[in-house]
Length: 235
Image 1 (cartoon, rainbow, N blue to C red):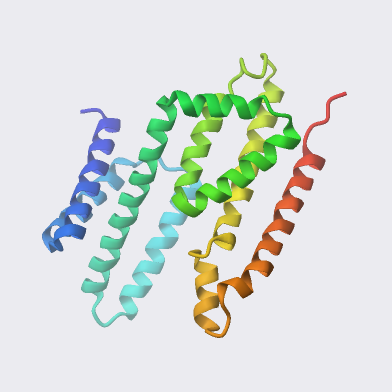
Image 2: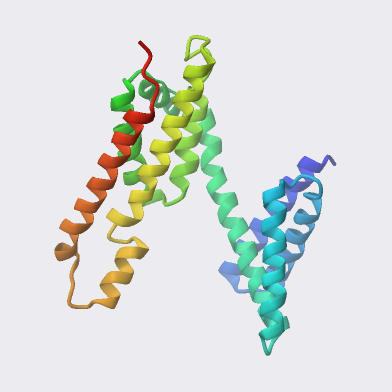
């Protein structure tokens, strides 16, 4: 079995074991998912970037410090590893949104229609779209919209001009990220709004909405202005 197939198989087994644990509450399946996840990490030897290695080392140091301070290090390590496996399952589930997006004819048409829009109109479409879809899909909207952008923004769509393709890629990705950053702010189910409403019981969502939507509007307009100023303006 090739290393790539082995990594995919490990992730699928981690996902399956974690889901069975969540449904049935079996500790054995949770342990199996943790073991397979460790095997997956071992297969990444030599594949990690310098930043990934740095983050992994920092996580290892913090883990050792937490275990040293904990009265029950074994239980803490097992619970943390289980959450790690759950997060890996979450990422795998989000990645599955990207696969149908690559094969969808509708997604391709949507991406092409966006590319045909003027840059000044393309930004609000992407930004507002990612904000609204982010309320429903959360971080999954990044996978979905990024796949749509990547699939439609080809060199042929830019008429062979590499600088146009790169400029479109940069501007559309920034519009996507800026729009997604508004989702936790404008969503009544967002963590920020939930914290404010739970901390201040006398404040209600209708009272908070004008300030939230006003701030979101200012952020959106500022991003749109930055996109226009920093974008290329060919003669």
